[in-house]
Length: 149
Image 1 (spheres, rainbow, N blue to C red):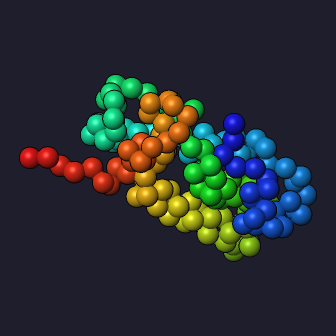
Image 2 (spheres, rainbow, N blue to C red):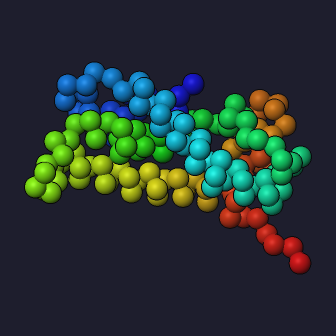
């Protein structure tokens, strides 16, 4: 399963398929893996450490099938554009002048960072009890964890 598709890319960069590359299927898979890795390091490891969720074990591995992947479409799109699609289109000028694709790459790198940070603040949906629905207590923000004295 992928978090984003070429149709999603077109919503943010309508002309992305007009530069000679017909599809970015492999790039969507790479972006999904990048997002999952970042989730494990920046959300899951903190969430399980603080036992922020019901029934959570600090030794459990993140089960990606319990995530609501639609929640990550924008962040995956920004990752595809910034790190995989646009770098294939740039000329990489030796004189240091940036072309429009390099400018867009920076823009989407910033959008990726911002969107990921906002997802963490809003709360990641994770079906801990594996009942097929995400309840309110299964949407956790690592920033909402309180320190108990």
